[in-house]
Image 1 (cartoon, protein in one colour):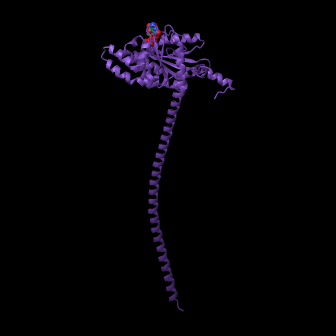
Image 2: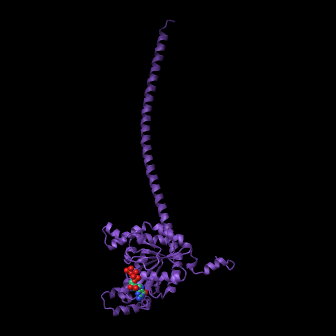
Image 3: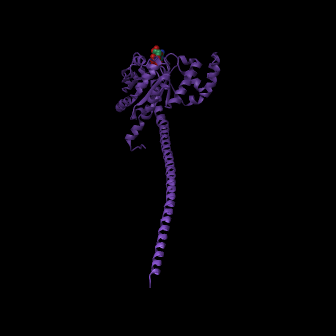
Length: 357
Ligand SMILES: Nc1nc2c(ncn2[C@@H]2O[C@H](COP(=O)(O)OP(=O)(O)OP(=O)(O)O)[C@@H](O)[C@H]2O)c(=O)[nH]1
């Protein structure tokens, strides 16, 4: 615990979390195609550079034509997406999934590189493919997010196109997707409402806070999904309560400071909620493994004991039979020798009595 006499500790605690963290915070940037992920990463990288906090940037999109920001690791340097498509006769999505899977097999090297930079890097940013499900519902996506989550403070940044989300149905679809990603990845989560230079995200905040305002918007929307959106909004109430939302413009940089503050809060959440939960799950897994080993050991011991018992029964049965056999034999031999002895004694007596006195 920090005390007044402990200035070093106090200074550490007074520092923002990002500054006193030993390891870089990993931001996994996800979002629907066209939501502005790449522009967001570009803007974030530029602003962090200006703050003299150059991030470590990793591009995980094997199919992008060009990366408009300084990138430290690029999946395209490791995997040739077009060649993968050709070699395995795959379509574009299959090609991206397979490229990402191939890259995931080398992810330990990415981890080593990030760890090497941990001294002077506070943030590592992962830009992901536009086909969001390629990352969120693939084995490689799970491997990457779970590995990062286990080793570094990791935050999912879900980018939403605010302009398109003015439609209650599109907004609801986006929220449902965000909810499903949160459920799948179980990492601290920030929703970035992008493109606020075009449309303010206030309407979305109001919809999330006040169900009746969302209902009014749904009333105005005559689409056949409106009823569904209304009932889903009630269902998502709990999700809205806990989720962090930040308005951002990837073009102007508006919302940058709020975003950094949200990342700080997410790191606290990572430390106080994710890590204990992660450790608890690891402990449960270890306990389950130990229990399973004990169960297998007991079963083996039980089977072994049964086997030994069965064998010893058959051996003792065999011995008993043999003993009986031996006893009979001994008896028979004994009886025979005793009979012989008596016969000899009789003969001796007879010869004695036949001798003339
Ligand atoms: N006005 C405005 N336009 C933006 C903003 N962010 C992105 N855009 C534009 O939105 C379009 C899509 O942006 P990208 O950054 O390519 O989106 P993405 O999510 O990376 O797209 P994919 O690579 O297909 O997944 C581009 O034309 C950007 O210029 C923003 O904050 N404001």
